[in-house]
Length: 168
Image 1 (cartoon, rainbow, N blue to C red):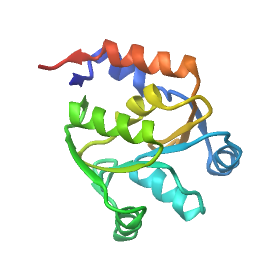
Image 2 (spheres, rainbow, N blue to C red):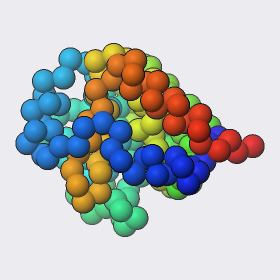
Image 3 (cartoon, rainbow, N blue to C red):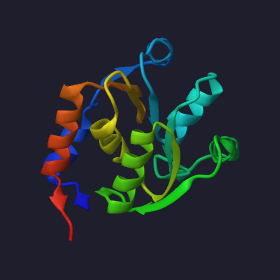
Image 4 (cartoon, one colour):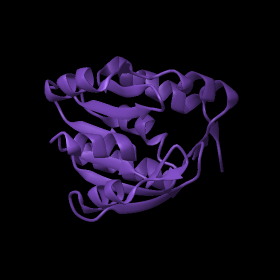
């Protein structure tokens, strides 16, 4: 398990990938060359509303610390079968979240419902996604962040993860 430190929290305030508006993000996602991993309720629901089916979805029924609306909840709960449920507190990456995201990304399919907070799941997804895949997450009040996966993105994610404080 890992926990954010003041340094890693500050690092992650900036988008890890490219921050885009809806129309540019849609074009980039439709033109991707690999799999698609969506982290976050609003972002995942937005993809579904636009006819895009992510390979992996990680969500927690919350958006900016508030319950999502019934439409979003129904869409995500009904998407692609049963979800694996894991517990993960805010500001942490538990072994359960790490393992579930890693396994789903490596198999190229999965849906994970997080009891707690899912925000840091994007970091795990970036560490294990193959070249050409895209990890998408929302940047509150700013837009959609797209991370095109390559060796550099994986190394950056691993470095940030390693800087986080270990929890025993």
